[in-house]
Amino acid sequence: MEELNHSEELVFWKLRLYVAGQTPKSVTAFANLTKICEQNLHGKYQIEVVDLLLQPHLARENQIFAIPTLIRQLPVPIRQIIGDLSNQEKVLLGLEIKPVNY
Image (cartoon, rainbow, N blue to C red; front, top):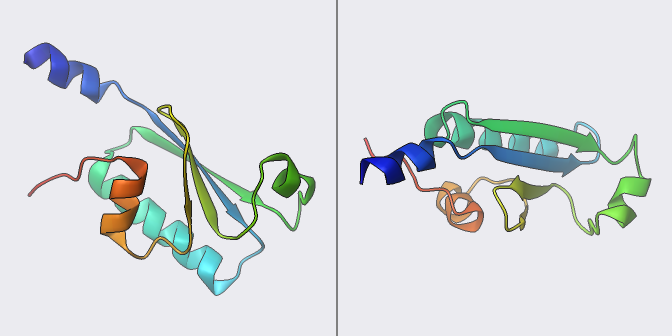
């Protein structure tokens, strides 16, 4: 049992948030994502923000049809969530993050 917990601790989360400028929804999505990660992933994550206004070709290349869009790149499989990430329960479920119980 101890080995399982140790292996779970080694999981690293790589998240990419696609936005279009500093819109209220984009800012809210980033704030919500940061809060969720801080509360549940304890520094075992990386958030990359991709501004599609600056790199519009990435929308087509990565099949981004709505913004903000969050992509979980690691751990596999890839997961995608669209919206401002305000529903924490939905985000945790969608990303398959086990919530930390206090």
